[in-house]
Length: 595
Image 1: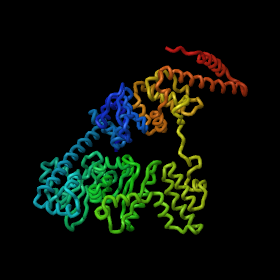
Image 2: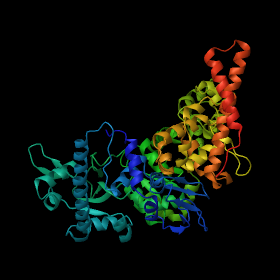
Image 3: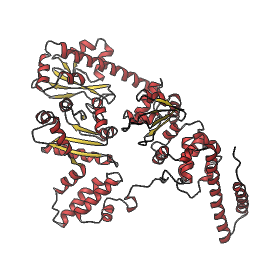
Image 4: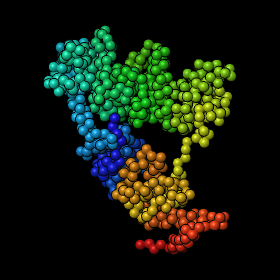
């Protein structure tokens, strides 16, 4: 398992790449003063409000609030995870990503193997597609696809191919030497015989290449022609292909998912292909496995709503409930999951051909929201007219609701359970081990201030330091602020410490240092915050704020010593400290000359 990516490497990477180049390659930018501008790629707008700062290596949209570093942009725009975005940037910069705790030689070996497997998979893909066009026996595959209503254009878009009957067709075409033959085995395309030798895994099948969300081929699925078994066959798990992470059709569906703000999860390749042909291009399929947490985490990076589409029979409803149980822990506020149950005997492929695009969209519009399905399913197992039936409902719901992240949805579902069981919300909170103090989302340490008016002293200081990290040179002793009793001080101290250790960091790098920390939310809000104080003479403004913070530290410490002096008296060291503080107060109170 790869270790954590060292922070020093991330800092070095962000210093080497230019965020303007990274974004301009995906969203054309135009120069606007010292910055660059474009219409925001994350929301619809006619007047550009998306700004990219080359100096700060930071982007910010004044319309929707999107912001971050080059890494954050790739995560948002390309829907990558953090490690994937780092890998992407590093590859463009010609760097290899190190991982703490991983042997470099093992990393090099894995990288070489990945390249070999990718190459042989691409060769196999070209071979299968060519056979669908040229092989003498391809007519059977073509007739099958035509019989399923697949157009030539859709077949080409999804790269459909044909694996002819025979034991070594692919081996003879691609496995030209011992290395390529071994690569075919590791890629899951060839199988070793017990008595020695190899044979093709896929034979007499229509072939469906499986891509990752960036378009790289990871494996294949094959649908048998005729009545052989198994009807559908997927590549096995390989160093590249993991069924619990990948989704068929996601690469082709990416833009449509982004436009629709939803993704439909179906069960088969042909469902995805048929829906795309009928204009519903935001469908993906799991690969012979139940929906996993990894699947959902990936899908929610593309859209806020996931609709599961299942058969209405018993097996379909069991699969839907398993998907619901998996989804619960992923439902942070703003995310939605719904369930569409099809008439018995129908699947998306057959139904969209009968009802057309409009009919299927109408069914999607009527999909059952997860909370409704949750209570419908559990209520069907109890008698709500009985006291012990309502108790049984609470007991069934308890372990499931405890999986929900703390937030609005959890509270609303608790309220609904309270209605059904006639229990108070406080009692329900105790039943699922949720203290009343945690019943509402935790407030951020730095309170949000209105755009106009006087901002919080700490908020303004943190925001200025975040926008202009070079101002950290004016902070002599970050620890001296720690005892200050003001909201936001722990974040101020952590940010000050960071910039004392790394004085050359720019805004984008600072944001990455706080990723996945307890301060990530506060940093995100302050990076997106806009206020006149941030556009004034920032150096003088920051020194004023710093002076006022020091005065407050002095005042609070002086008051504590005065109180102690009146109560129990001070020792010699404390008396000396009090004299020093009083002298500092006089110095701090004097007007500071401005340049």
